[in-house]
Length: 146
Image 1 (cartoon, rainbow, N blue to C red):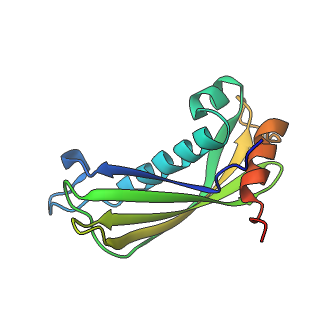
Image 2: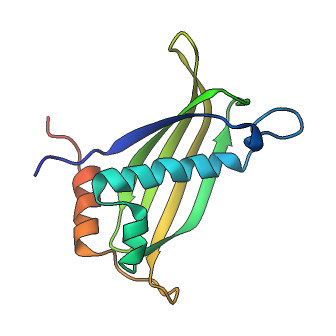
């Protein structure tokens, strides 16, 4: 089986509905953008997150840290790079780099973030990650051979 990606990127245009009265992207939207990156990485590593939930595994965000560096505005091209940071039997953490992609291809760092998620069952009780998901996460988190 080929190695799994440790990171992925998603790109999109910032939407008008995400702006505040000052025309700047409202700060909670960055968490939504992180979720977009995280669910795409899970899709690439294993399967769509909707299928993960149908299989009875819910990943609850237990902590989130964001640091804002610059502002995004309506119609900016935004790139979110999501990296699998740490894997444990019941939990996983991801880091995020949110950037604006300029017309000339250069980037401006907008936000750096980290989320920790814990696996729970439908009743909300902590549970172990399924073995195949845990294996996929561990393969992706393993350092590249030199």
